[in-house]
Image 1 (cartoon, rainbow, N blue to C red):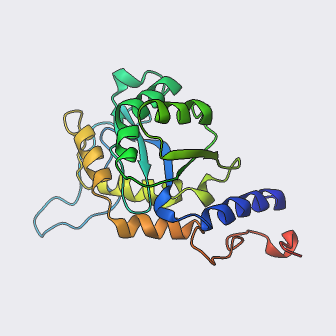
Image 2 (tube, helix red, strand yellow):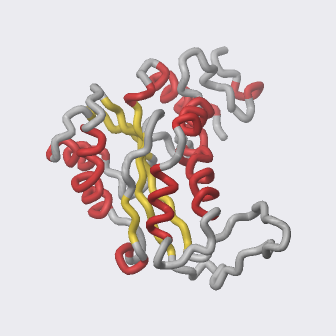
Length: 226
């Protein structure tokens, strides 16, 4: 991790620390495969201590989800089955999600102005995404910011364990099969508690007065602020 990247991350944190966190949104994509199971669980005496998975390979059917959250709520996701996703989520699929689902859900917050943070995925085009929000009635969204390269694990609540927590909740419903996986994924996302969202926003360093260099891997070498 270079000193310049740490400075880029610190700059984003300074900006977001000055914004009310209920006006800061994050969007990203993730996926779950059929037959995923929890890594650990509790069972009653006499019950089988395992769940049989029919396909644990990388070729198991993959269901992709586009999701968005604020510090106090999750927004309805969209989930694509293998026959819908093709080789992966495309820019057109993302814009369709904004048009059909997200613009209306975000606009219903009645908060102004809103800022959306995204990573540098090739399907993320801030200008086109912002236009889609505005075209479909969400004028409250005023800015879409790209995170610095290779910084999502430090700046995104979604990458900073929220997706992990969500997947653990999904796996608790194992065995996941084609007939239940999309419902389980959506229900688990929609049920994430506010306290969990807030904790991951805090872990990313967005709260006022947090040290913007708190997770610098080499503070002595980088000498931030000197």
